[in-house]
Length: 391
Image 1 (tube, rainbow, N blue to C red):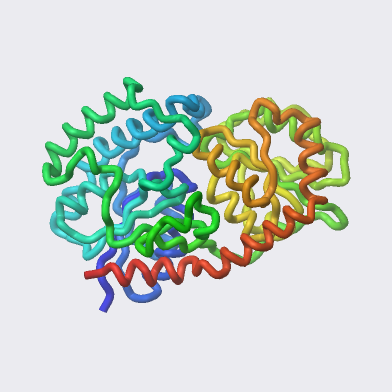
Image 2 (image 1 turned 90 degrees about the horizontal axis):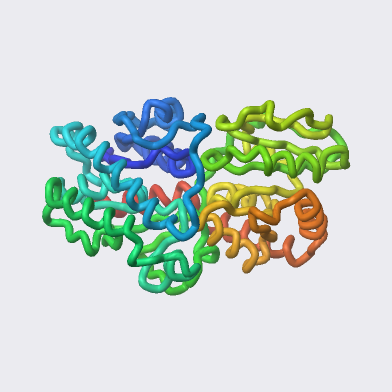
């Protein structure tokens, strides 16, 4: 008999999409999955088989052109405060929904703090999702990249508001241990070998790899051209300067360039583009990667893992601290190369791609990661783990 599994997530595409094949697998097995998300994400979540429990989010919409990446030195504290504010806004919307529909298990994204608190309040077991690198006592992004300032006043604001939030909604939770919960399992959407110090994470951390949805092909390449995919993801993508650099670097060459620019940009800012440059707001990324020779991206975890699953090396141009950590790992493991955002000019982009696609060591690294992804288990292993955590 199926059980009730509640998913709590933030509305970012890079956090929602990795969960959808897992939801599909759980509903296929007969479980009732409810999923807390925004109306904007309702179509894809319902298509995966879940019952949507909608909430109104404080997060910027996909088309908001004003969204900018936080400064590196304040990235962690500002991110924590932003998602605590999101939890404050969403908890009171979601708690009554589950008062009379108690789940058997709560699956919550690392940044979906409302799910963590509600699970504790209801005293139900949990699984924590990691669509980003996992942190624990052995490795953390702030410490590894020397980007965490405990004296940051924004961090002090976060801590004070967290204490007040927990005191009101779940006094049993210790604010000092809020970011280090002990769920029944942690699920990370990449292989263990991509994790810094991965061997030091115990069996409670399941590195299941990317969970990908294989749909019928909707994009086909032109004949006799290598395909280069250029994307900055779906969040900090209002970068006409970056896209213009890519057009200048590869326009008029033998590459077929697919430029996926998202909804925040004014397309007129790109100017006229050569015939070998295909500009789209969105592309079916797995379809393009199935034909691609290389990818230039911001080093978001989802994009990097999709590229590796297709055997495509990555030129990473990170914009945030989280992406910087991913880009460094790409370079360390020989999965591609990286450029700092300020050095991603046309000449640097062109040279980096030319060297990368000819480097046999990089192709070996990509092949090794592709095999690790296959062995990690994907959505089937993720669903197995969630079922094992049911009471």
